[in-house]
Amino acid sequence: MRVLAMLDGTLADADGPLIRADDLGLLRGDGVFETVLVVDGRPRELGPHLDRLTRSAAMLDLPPPDRAAWERVTQVVIDAWDAPGEMALKLVYTRGPEFGDGLPTAYALGLPIGAKTLENRVGGVTAVSLDRGFDPAIVERAPWLLLGAKTLSYAVNMAAMRYAASHGADEAIFVASDGSVLEGPTSTVVVVSGREMRTTPPSSGVLAGTTQGALFRAAERAGWTTKVEPVQRDDLDSADGVFLASSVRKITRVRVLDGVAMPECEPLHRELSALYEAEYAT
Ligand SMILES: Cc1ncc(COP(=O)(O)O)c(C=O)c1O
Image (tube, rainbow, N blue to C red; front, side, top):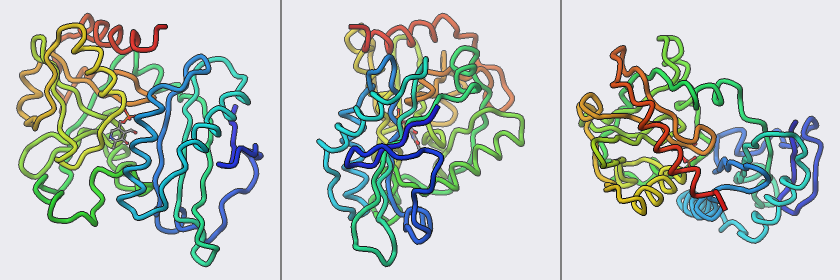
């Protein structure tokens, strides 16, 4: 099932035409988006998702998103969704048509979660590390690269996923040219050693993950140490567990990295998943 609604709350035909041929989101990937997980009719981390949408829009000089309208349209899609299971809710905000009235294109689209994603949540994934071709120091020097903004320009991210697949892996982990770990093409990397969790800081040019944020919040309350600091590629080899976190993946464990089996960490995965799920257990 799919549900589509425009930002003003009007439901639209999810199978019908929507985007103008000259929309800059389509022509140039000039826009931003979010993917929110909805479970049992409740959106997870909607506040942090809208915060990030606002930050991303500001980095692209798009008009500030109307937060109340995005909250309303989220509910419109949730109310119209009557399929069992979870929903991935895309919030899409583009610069609009090239020769239009200057207003952004804005809509929300509810989609099911792919079968492979659901499978990987349980069984874990194989991953390869791939050079992302930049040094984290570039983030400050070159704001036009939009590192840290969740833009619609995901062709490189999708190419990395296809490259990983063509080399027999389910996932990719981007590494910077200084040897530090960045993120997955659509996920945050979380590294666990003992009772400590670490992830790469947004200042290195990665997205601030809402799922990782929720996990770290829960973990801190449960007595874990959490650190947001640079992680080296070599640190992954000596970790007790490496996990990919994202709204649709939840917390997925990496079983094999660059062809080498990681330590068996199913109990650790269960513990992290329980911490994350407990955030939404009321
Ligand atoms: C590049 C990138 N990093 C990290 C994430 C994880 O973010 P979140 O946990 O908010 O879904 C995503 C999500 O799609 C992403 O595209």
